[in-house]
Length: 322
Ligand code: OGA
Ligand code: NI
Image (cartoon, rainbow, N blue to C red):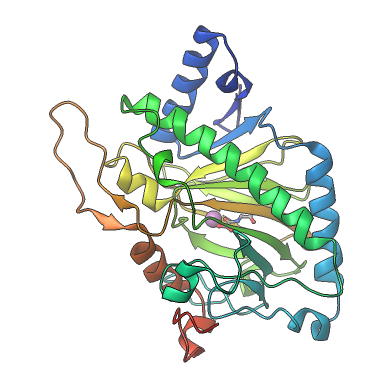
């Protein structure tokens, strides 16, 4: 099944015993990652009740006053609330008309990787006015991380390399999740909801509401809608996985066109490995590596610097001093 030529893949066989069904699903994922860069996954294992609760927290958080949200204003370590105007996709002239709340692994102030600095691991910021957020959002993070790792195993398998080629670097991942809010705007030409970009990391798992507006650029250069399909995640390949797969998988440009009348909410989990994972392009048979090895955190940090205004303004960057 496809929607606007974007495959819809039931991934439940990946956790099952049926070898044929698993091979079929793996082949479908491999094909989608190689030829489209975007696919929907159904039967992904993230409970519907957890999704509903996360959505309702997103609405409550963004609906709070600016003063309240300022309590968790984005840290130098990319955790907390990014106000409208703080994110601009590389090469675009305008900032995005969106706000977001970003969190990751729930580590403590005395965490050795955090203290060392430069490793993109840092304590989360939790708002005191929404005490339910911490446990619920961590549950959400863990559930989507598990789904992402399941997909990465299948994608490695599809490439013909060891299924754990990617996920063996996932004991303390620098993955991030984001609640995102796109306010309505009557004239989208004035400011994009999200400007054209490719994602930086390995995989993005995106849950969207029923408003719509996400679009991908096809190989032919036209824009196509990634229509909301209830109960599915939209998954896309990021630049890091395109590189790590030695160019077999493709990261596809996409954007968000805001609704003229409705608020749109989405939940994104950006799946990435450990900070010090060395990305050696996965070569098969007689293939040459097309990219130099790169360390995960170095690559992601460089991309952050291009995209987020606050990183230019901060004098303390990834110094481990909080
Ligand atoms: C992103 C992204 C799309 C959306 O955060 O990288 O493309 O629908 N989000 O929020
Ligand atoms: Ni994106």
